[in-house]
Length: 434
Ligand code: 9WN
Image 1 (spheres, rainbow, N blue to C red):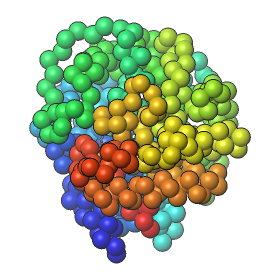
Image 2 (image 1 turned 90 degrees about the horizontal axis):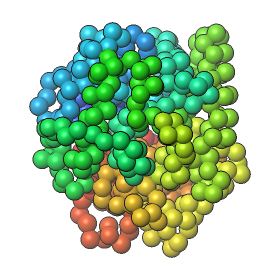
Image 3 (image 1 turned 30 degrees about the horizontal axis):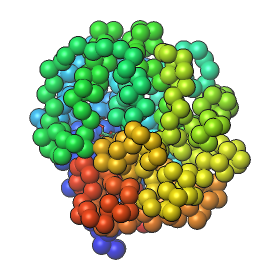
């Protein structure tokens, strides 16, 4: 093992809590939905039984209607806000006994299962496991297409910025300016644990909490949320993850002879891919953008989420060629390739901030998603740059949560941003190295 691989493996071992992996000691002390997916890929390389446990633990939080929450509170911890009592998922008649939040995150589980299948040496054993969890993942996709697509158009909505996974992307600024919020008493812990200037502001947290308070009033009823939530977005990353997961469970379903479910998934899939291209591809920006259902408008901004459709095979070759220009002397690479790939928000925008969370810094899961997408379309050279940049940042700073994109600024830094020993940074490094 190289030492980077050993160090990455150590991070996962340290963050393992008996049956699941926390994203980061202190900062994120519970099980998170999409984190656990990326983490399971890392475990699959090291210890297949742990990869399976990770997935089973996440599914313990699944609701009766198929919904999978963004946090599962298996354990108690005082270092995170908002905890289970703020989310109060028990208000919904769909929630399980296990404490959870009442909002979700990008649905990566379907393609994670296929990744695990591909990594596994004992195919029979892993297929047996996938057989066990297949219906739960199918039910989750069924939930999305029957509860999160009120106009029945093939794209699903998210109702909270935490559902996007990209919590404070500047795109949400344009939603916050559409409504007022009361002044909630916040009990933030994150800003005491790491540099507060790298985190969202208190004003932004007022919006985050306000949405949760509304959903609680509505007992997390999807019809009321779709009818009243001021945040109702078709997000290109979220829909791409669902489409990539559909594709994977269609393939796995065929191996398992789940003919009827494969048929239904394929119908959702065809419509979803078409709609991504007719509704979310922006011809001027050469990228996928966001649609604000509440205010019926496109939010035309380019973030790293705009490139995620590559991984799900959504763009035509011509669209993909146009997307790739952002990395070849375009705004993300910089004209002279002065940036590491891939910033989380358009570095040429006035809203870009290279240090602040999802407003600019590089995130390793998005790099991995974009790397996979570029490989899928045969852009091997540029995919290789993303892989090299990712491994360079890990090697130089360690497994931080996010990183500075500017090569010049990086020269004077000795660490990354946000939490350290962050699980998905380690897990996906393992995958890129093996
Ligand atoms: C809210 C756990 C999560 C990631 C998100 C990331 C951050 C949480 C927070 O941490 O969000 O879910 O409290 O800031 O934005 O993508 O899943 O690592």
